[in-house]
Amino acid sequence: MTPALVFDGLLALLAVAAAMAAIGGRDLFGSVAFFIVYGLLIAIAWVRLDAIDVALAEAAIGAGLTGILLISALARVERTASSGESGEGGRLAKIAAALLCAGVAGALAWAALALDPQGAGLTPLISEALPQAGVGNPVTAVLLNFRAYDTLLESIVLLFALVAVWSLADDGNWGGLPGLRQHARSDGVLATFGRLLPPFGLVVAVYLVWAGSENPGGAFQGGTVLAAIWLLVAMAGITELPRVSSLPLRAALVFGPAFFLAVGAIGALAGTFLGLAPAAAKAIILAVEAGLTLSIAATLALLVAGSPQRTQG
Amino acid sequence: MSGALGHSATLFALTGAALVGIGLYGFVARTHLLRRVLAFNVIGSGVFLFFGATGFRRPDLGADPAPQALIITGIIVALSLTALALALITRYAALSGRSSLEDEAPDDEAPDAGDERGGG
Image (tube, each protein chain N blue to C red):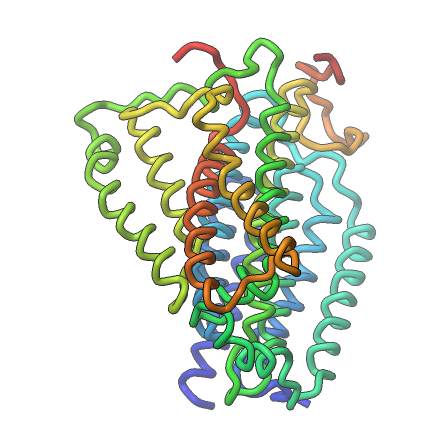
């Protein structure tokens, strides 16, 4: 038993315990708190698996943004709905469900143990093609070059989710301001942080995108930091998020995916849709990432703010 | 058979399998809609952990970048779905005054206020 293995074992135990507390708890707010802790533990597990890019995404998006979304939804639901967890099945049904789920987990565990321990996966192929990819970080190369299709469609999924969330607004609020009015004391902690943190956040976000070509980081991680900064400034009452009918906002939301699509179309004229010539790959990837960062930041911030709920500031 | 994937990756793959089971239980057995969204996210991150850990089989090669990229994509798609589901739930709760889809249990005292369904 090496110390590393002991650490990993404790980490796995803590993550499982936090997940159980989040699922089984009585109080929903407590469950959400456990879920955020769980997400951060999983992020550490990703670091242990040498997947720093995933760790950054999990900590920022899986734990952070999902946690914020759950907390704000909880506050809204508890204002309007009965909170009892009614209609839960009897003891017998719960035992049957638990056995079934244990069976699924057991089958997955068996599948993991049955894998060929010497399987190399796609790593050799990717290492071979990496010199032509234009970037040194293999994960960025897969995301924006080898499997750019996924990333393009994913950025469009994110946009569609925002359109769907907006479309749930009351008719009277359509085109209005997202989220509720923020009240913050101008000399309070929130307002002070709202003025202090943005410059640092901007630097971190730009660094994550720029460094993402050679080191862990990238458009999604950088975009999330930007979104967090924008939300912080809005929550501190320093600025207001724009109306959902605002044209500059909509341009910012669409720009990244549209630019990506245009690059793909140019590639199609040259032979392959989304194909990048090795000589120009780095410049194109950085340009696409810059555009995506802007759009992802705007989309994520507005997803957290929610559907338009008022027409006056 | 333990250690088939080499060092801690096996441990994390098994953890991922356990998390899928735990999340699935929450999704099936708990009825509050917000808890179901939370359980969906536990299933998701369990699948990601399983996927990523099984992509780390040979310590000399390290973590396979292809699963990592797909997992980052998956995290974003899961967030999109979570945001949409939560917006739908918020709207449902505002219109119906309820936070689960189940019929009220017979042994549960039914809340009398704001129980009209539909509307809008």
